[in-house]
Image (cartoon, rainbow, N blue to C red; front, top):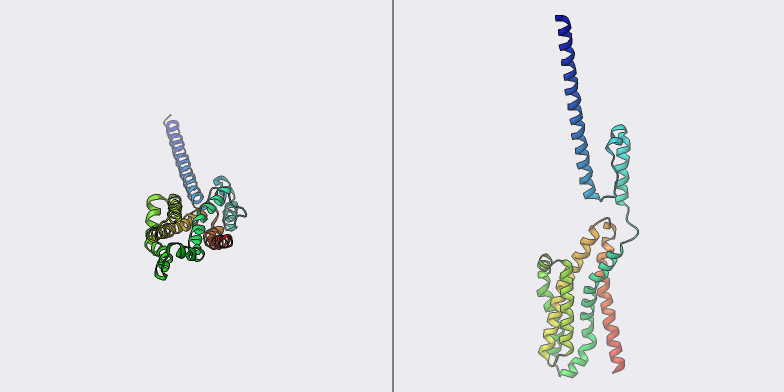
Length: 245
C-alpha cells in the first residue's frame, strides 16, 4: 500500500512537472510570436505595408522561406515605381506655381521697364531700383521661409505667398507713381523667396512618402522647370504687348 501511494505521488509530480514545462514552452512561444509581430510592424512602418510579407509559422518550419520573403521585399523597395498617384501630380503642379510666378516676375521687367519708364517719367536710377527691389525683397524674406513653413505648414505657406503675389501684381497694375511700383515689386520679391522655400521642401517631403524616392529628383526639379517656363511666359507677354503697341 505504501509502495502504491509512493508510485502515485511520483506520477502526480511527474504530471505537474510536465504541465509546468508545457506552460513555460507555450509562454515562450507566445513571447517569441509577439516579438516577431513587433519586428514586422517596425519594418512595415519603415519600408511600407506592401513591401514584404513575413509569416512566423512558415518561418519556423522553413527559415529559408522567411529570408526569401524579406529579400523579395527589399528588392521590390529598390525598384522605382512606374506611375505616380494623381494626387501627387496635382500637388506637383500646385507647388510649381511658385516657380512660375518667380520666373515671370524676373522676366517681365525686361519687357515692361521701357514702357513703365516712359509712362512714369522714371530716371535711369529709378528704373534700376524698380528692377532691384524685387531682389531686395527676395533676399530679405528667403531666410524666413523655413520659419513660415514650420508655423503655417508647407502647403499653407505656398497658398498665402501665391496670394501675396496676386496682391503685388494688383498693386503694380494700378500704381499711380514710382513709390507704389517699388512697394509692389518688393512685396513680389518677399512672396517669391518664401514660396520657393516652401515649394521645394513640400515636394521633397511628398516624394519621400510611400515609395516615391526614385522620383524625388524629377519632382523637385519641376520647380526649376517652372521658373524657366515663367521666363518664357513673361517674354511672350512682352512680345504681345509690344506688337499691339
